[in-house]
Amino acid sequence: MSSTKRFVEQRIVKRREQEARDQELRRRLMENNIYAGYGKSELNVEKKRRALSEANERRELYMDYSFVKTEQDKTKRVQIAQFEDQLADELAKRKAEQMRHDMDRRRICDGSEELRVLKERLHMAKVNKERAQQLLEIEVRKEKDRITGHLLAEHMENERLEQQELEHKLDIEKKRQRERVKVINQQQIAMKEAQREEAMQEYIKEMEGHMERNQVEELVAKIADEDANEAKARAEKQMESRVMLQQFMVEQKANQEKLEAEEKAENERIEQFARDKREREERLEQERQEKEKEKLRILNAMLGQMEAKNKAAEELELLRNDLHLEELEAESRRREEMQMRKKLEDKEEMKNAYLVQMRAKEEKMLHAREEEGRMREELLKKFAEDDRLEQLNEQKRRMKVEQHRREAERLVELRREMYELARAQEREEQDALRKDEDKRRLIIEDERRRLLREHGQELKKFLPKHTLESMEDVVCFVVTTSYFSVKPRRHDLRNARILPEHFSVKHNWQNKALPTMRCSTTRKQVCPAFRASSENSTCPRARLKTSLAESARPLGILFA
Image (cartoon, rainbow, N blue to C red; front, top):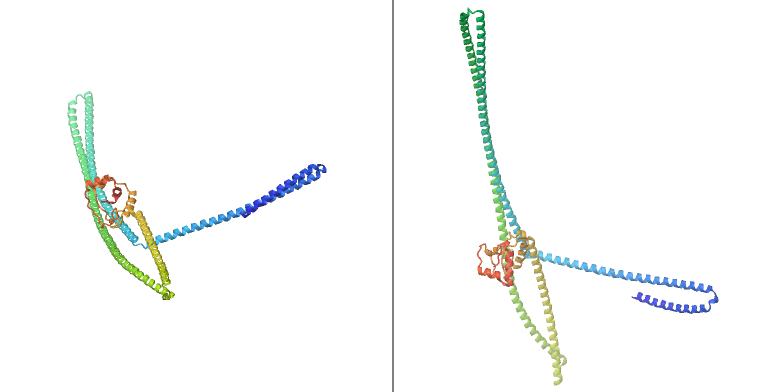
């Protein structure tokens, strides 16, 4: 501010100097006009002097501007640095406040008995979920084993049927082979018979042609010897035919016997081969059956051992889980009993403390009144002794007594004000403690809702009893679970009237104390009149109850 003022004053001074110079210049111009004839040298000198003066003025103005600009930049940098320092201090203050708030919140959450119980119950719900998953895995494993055994038996039955079908096909093929061999043998026999007949016919034809030629020759050459030669030729022909026929019959019989022997040997070989093959197949089948029986025996033994081991492991796991759950439930019941007993003891202690405090307050007030009267009398006596009232006359004595009374009243009032101030400080301390308790209660409720929102979806079917202790927990839990699930239909809510096993209602809609209601797994029909009235009701409380009931349907919860 001072630099700007100085700059303005300098400008004003310079402007005045400039005006004075202008006046002087005008005067000099007039003189120059008068003395124009004095020569041009003086005019040039004046121009140079004026140019030099203007240059000096411009230099001074630039120096002043640079100085003011530097001072303004310095002031701006100082202001920016101060603003940055204030901003950094404010951010550090907010960060420290947030850290302090987080530390207080963590300390309150770590020291809260309710949150510890809720975490234990959520842990119990996780244990229940893991146990349900283990039971489901056991059932799935049993089902897989059953399906595997069924598939194994089906595979073995299919192999047996395929083996029987293969044996049946082999028997059919053997029969067909025998039929083909028999047909081939019959065809060969028929073909040989046909060849024999054909050879016989050709032989007969040749013999007949030969006889005709001999007769012609004999008729031409020896007509005389025809009768003798004819008889002789006929006898020879008959003998030769008989010999050839006998030879043919012997050969045919030998061939027939040979064919029969070959066929018999072939049949014997086929029968022996079939018999050997049957024996081999029977032996292989017997060995295969023995192997299958041994495999089945080993498989049954292994399955029995595995089933026994699995059953023993499952029983041990179930016993372990049951024991763990019983221990958790016993511990939970013990803690609940201790908590209820502690609440009753705290309530009784608070009641006794309240009675003791009231008695102490009455005694204190009585003692204060007595002390006030005694102090008033002592002050009056002291003032009387100080002023020696008995030595004064009546009027002065009355005036002194009145003055003493006013002074005593002033002191008593001053002490009363001090007492009221102390009481006000006590009330402020109590209000601060109450606010701290409300803050602690709010932090604990927020942490409860956070835990319920975090674990509500995955553990909603496995929560133990009395996990949801208030209507706020129910609303938070229902809203959390209904966000991830399908909204139920209204008519599905009309056929059930149950409370969850893990919920106990402790307050009604008007925040009045109610006895704890345990779960009821029985389903009852809702009264139609009540149902119609609840559906058609325009009461906000009834609408809220209906909306909560609709959202709580996936949890198995229905509010009466």
